[in-house]
Length: 155
Image 1 (cartoon, rainbow, N blue to C red):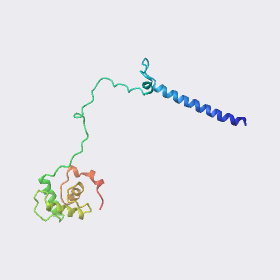
Image 2 (image 1 turned 90 degrees about the vertical axis):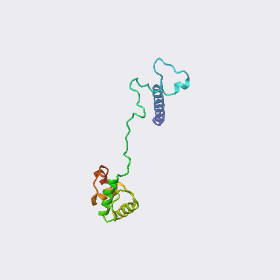
Image 3 (image 1 turned 45 degrees about the vertical axis):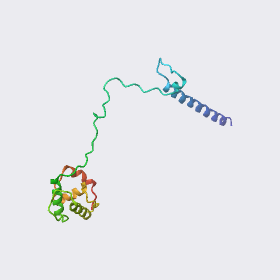
Image 4 (image 1 turned 180 degrees about the vertical axis):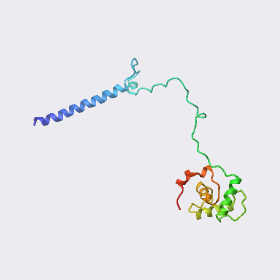
């Protein structure tokens, strides 16, 4: 029975020493640098300020920093629209002479083409529509290259 009373007391002693050690470790981390004394007890409790960076290269201003830019979609040229209209005509969805303008007839043909090819029929040009139009003679550009193939929905 005597051994059972010693066990809890020794466990408490270990716990007290462990807490004291952790507390002492935390105080050692927060101790002020050698030769400097905190001005008040509140300042002593605070963590020391981060070390200043060595003088050298100044931080670049916002205007000179390099940023990752995402290419913004631009309106297709009149020649590109003519190519799209010819491809729509080859697919049987555009029945007019190519004008080079994105007019109502072109939007209706795009919507019809998109619906027939399993795309969302928005009537607007997008990468997937352009990629499908390549099957009807639309020349490929860098924006409709092979990287888009993995993202296209399968029919």
